Length: 199
Image (tube, rainbow, N blue to C red; front, side, top):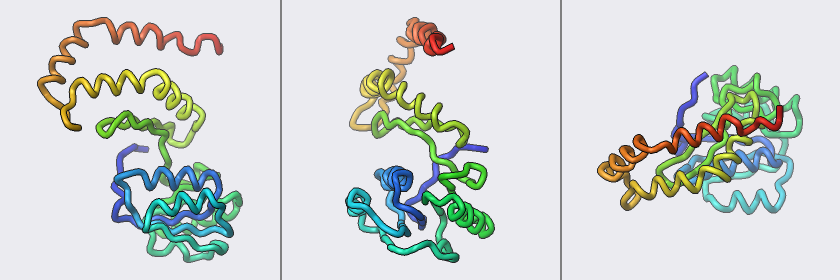
């Protein structure tokens, strides 16, 4: 297993289902600068899902059940229905056709996984992944980063950037200061005892 960033701007993505998982997946997929072609097949779409779809012009909905062959000509398929058997059929069909697929109800029937990520600013985004083994741990780490470290990391980045680009001279100065301080040591001492009361 290897994690890497994948440009989806010229890709065709099929989402099957329109529940909470499908909504989360869609939100992540349409984050700027992503702009792929997206088709969503579902028996029905609630108003919040329709509002989300209206944010992009290249999202198309089809209100009907999934049919075998619907995933033809797509690069990525997301099986997000509340029907585990249907998700399994979609996954098997996609894998047989060498299409990237994520089955929301079964990790072993997926060949791609979604990471939990924290956007610090336009320069830094932190991706957290357990390769689908523990979404709970990924979510816990995301909360820790967002509530404890995000603001500090943003301040650090702002101190070494000019107009959205890294200023190498400023970066070098901050690096020297950091290396000569005990900031990292203090962070390590606190983090080592972070979950002690749970055990």
